[in-house]
Length: 410
Ligand code: SF4
Ligand code: SF4
Image (cartoon, rainbow, N blue to C red; front, side, top):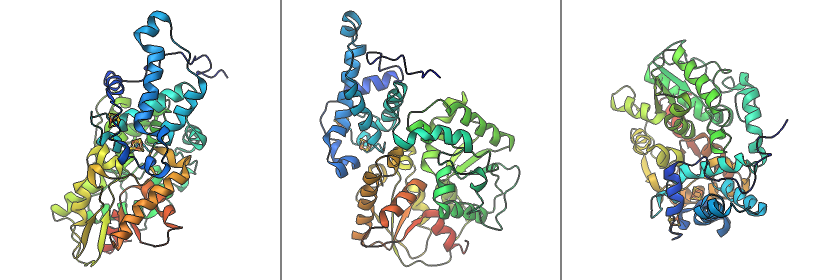
């Protein structure tokens, strides 16, 4: 088979996949370096070659060589292959946490920009890296990027006694990382949904395929439209009006990108589980009687806070626990620090991810928290891994796992 990238030259345009505003953003970077301080990858690697301004500077050079007026009149320059490979490694080592964009002096939306630069390097046959390459085939065969059997998607964790109806206005999407790597989290989700008392539906395990986020974030966009249409039609056939999910990355792509791949507005709204549960507490449909006299600290997942602006709802949920003292990380809400699991970088740069996870644990320990509360399956899996060799142990608990336990479920 002939690869679609085989005929691409290093002098071909670099701006095909960028929006006009992203082209302006790339030009706008002043190289001020204000974003360096907040970059978790910089913090653990100390490697300036993979810093946000350096990545933008390099990409700007590629554009100047191939797409500038001078290039148009005098001919595009061939870019050295080694430079392109270095750039590809830098762009894939990033966790796409978006902290640099949050702190950018000229307002560059890096959480949206970096995935598009990755897509460009994939188009040129330089990315993705390592095991990220296996994801499309795994999703094609099994429906999930881990290549695990579809029949094991729910069965290892789905609690006895929880009812799922055939059709309902509310549907729950477990997501691949929760279903295969963070069982207490998805188990907690369905137990709390049942405690609210509103019937909910789910797609059968072989139909609940990947939301597309791992492909989107690694620049492998070919299968996205098919996955999105399949899922949207599945929920539509079940008369769904609200799709509930606990994974911030799923919620992010569903809310921001599904309408683009579906080609129109979705026939249902997307809600993160903390929005639904905070609403149920406020409406008196849930109440926790048990006291928990503990200091707990909540970590904001990057794709939930900076991604879709959900920051108060998880705190509102936790404030319904009698007796707790809610602590904050120094970097919280829009300013939160990546736990290391984001952007599929953990699949290739495992040591960086563990080092970032340890920083989160260190701060929770320093603040004398009794529990570290998470609300993302990727954070859950990676921070647990970082805890394995950590000298001080602290329980890591998903927010719905905690609530389900206090409601006497699970
Ligand atoms: S998105 Fe996060 S990891 Fe990537 S460059 Fe920005 S701050 Fe660093
Ligand atoms: S803060 Fe913004 S403008 Fe300054 S170096 Fe970072 S990306 Fe560029």
